[in-house]
Image (cartoon, rainbow, N blue to C red; front, side):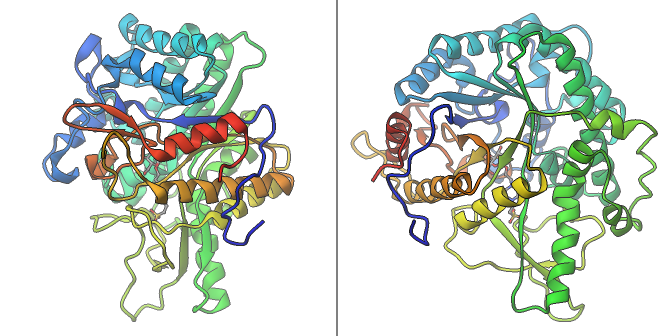
Length: 476
Ligand code: GBH
């Protein structure tokens, strides 16, 4: 293997699930149709100043109306799996009560359409589109939201349970909590450290309660249960002293990673996390018995990986680096750790400004394997936005994306060679879509979407991926 991870020819084992991922609000559109209620992302994107250029998900990729054509496209591309998310407000417009049959029917058609085409469905129950009615009651700051989520999970299990290969409770609760309630760059746009940590706990509780509600309805024994985390691959800034690096890494690891893996996989919040955040909250929102509810067995852990972060402790006087990747926002996504500095990383960078670090993926997978040797892993998102994707004579040349994917598939392969039980890889994203606070300005797709005509064009990276899937080897 070459040190820059630019390998070809490496072979992936039979059974390894090659697929691609999307999320409801980012692709569906049709936000007022068939009984869908508003979500926090409808409210947020329609609030001036929140999303770049005032973009919204009102139309997005119009996937809701183009379901069959999109399914055919997935089949032509040879996808073995498709990871999608279910919009809670399509199932319960206000987050409570009887499920909306039309909403369930849409996802039923999606799942049946996948199965008919031999594509394995991987369903995420929550990818950030909380019903606005629940936010009006406090959203993830409100403990009751976790119980509402369990009801919702129960309905999903009853309607779709036996047709889903892998269920994921939450996508990246880190983002929901810290970007939604800490920095405020995501919906609902609250900037308050205590609110963010309260949300962390209620999201964890939702995971545990939701998993139990789902399991109680599903009879198919092979069904897999999971959560998807965006674990941070954290490195120390080598220009700083060893102690400064270690302290900063420990602090960010506690907030970003162990705040979720602790309760979900070990049944406890890390003691250092509680101490580090003591000036922000006393954690009294954690009640007796909660940790038992959260600590449910899962069959596979979903890993979303894009980049690394590099940290050191701020010395208190030199100008602070602002390279925390979150732009200028009112709040911090790191409650109680404002003295940790995120430093500029070596490029090259993607269009998001994230540095390209396939070695970080290999290391993250190895670290997880060491910490949780019995737990199978699945890459539930990896991919990149690059500028310049455009259709010329029916073709989209995106060599940078091919290079990015090649290097990250190589990294994943190396980790598997070193003993990691990696079950599959879902490329983010199947098609260009609403990239949250960046609107339609960042393109992550392996399929190009023309936002005027909504026409889809498979990019060269998409063709490259089809060849990888067909041959099970990383192409030239
Ligand atoms: C995912 O979020 C989402 O699940 C998906 O919906 C989204 O479209 C996709 O990725 C692309 O953004 O920001 O410098 O601290 C990923 C969000 C990206 C947040 C990496 C944490 C860590 C580096 N994460 N980021 S930095």
